[in-house]
Length: 79
Image (cartoon, rainbow, N blue to C red):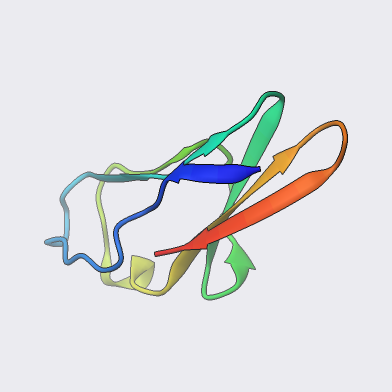
């Protein structure tokens, strides 16, 4: 799995605003999982990390892992 689009290295977003960050991997049968400070972000398992209203609690370092179902191959990207 190779990432075709990396998430932005750094960005600032005003509280209460919606935000989306994407990281697109190349390949078929891919699944994604986003992490904040190394911990799984529940419900964020697509190529796009989305928040409807950002809060201070959402601040942190985000990364994404893309996994291909068969054969197992993993790639990660850090924002």
